[in-house]
Image (cartoon, rainbow, N blue to C red; front, side, top):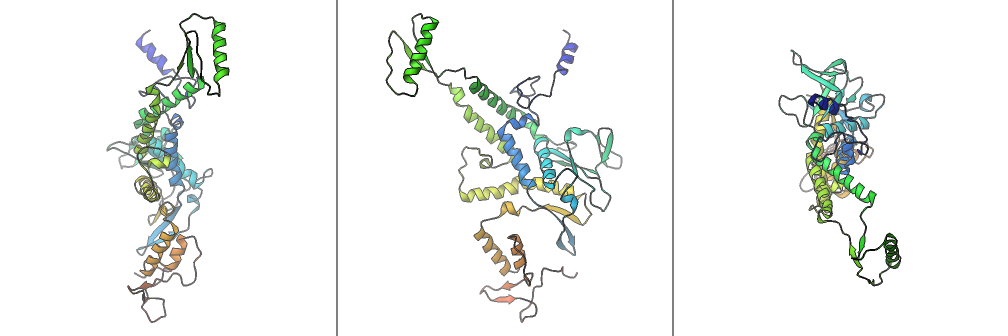
Length: 400
């Protein structure tokens, strides 16, 4: 067989198999000997937990539209394209797919045709594998080839996780963690075969004498009948010996190896270990779990949120911008929130109606007025029309 013929046969091998790889293993792209793709990676419960946690967390946040007018940030009504970005998806599903693409492939592509100064007609997430080519035109515009059509960066926004200089596609976590994920899949396969086949007996009856198959069957059945679910002493005669079959030390350490893989994948995605039910050396109490949740938003989710916000905001009119509201993830307990709101109201940085909005309460008349209390608790600025100076209201932006 020639080298060319071997290469042709190797390329002819199937590369699309079932997620659990029971039917075939055509090639081994990592040292574990397992095929790791965006589908098979979810056979690892750690990958499924980590990736779905990131996608669910960001997609669950409300996406708010605002603009800056006269130096004041104003909330705007949510347009229909940010409620239902296309005919087949809700905003949750759209953001969820964007996060899945980022967490697995390290990049996401959003197709959003629009005219200058207007909102996009629709928004869709394009699978990274569909981007066949990328080039930069003479005027500096980036162009992407999907099928037989070319799309400029004005209507196809690219979001990258880890992008090296002079590269057009970022590093893929799926590729970088291929050996780790493959090892996790290999361990699951070994355990499934071990318990599925059940070929290892619990114990062995040994004797130096030569016995027939019928005698061996009688000895086995007699032993099982006498000792199954019983704790009576055993009496062995005729040189018969009982020996327990135990797993090897290497097999006993498999659980430790699996937990080490959980820690590795959690470390790569910067996810607190307790959030994916991992174990090992990070005892959590109520206080540090709460702080860990805040750190999860700050150091893990926030970079993803900013990338998506920037990409969508570039498709909007110049003065408008979208922002994820992460307050639900960072909310303290009720007593702490009320004390913080009370302090802000008394210091003139928050109106009562703004505090009520944080608690999903209806506003009341006069609740948009700022007040200010002195150190003694006496008001030094108050409502309009009174004897004290006023700080204004939150209803209209100040004149500039």
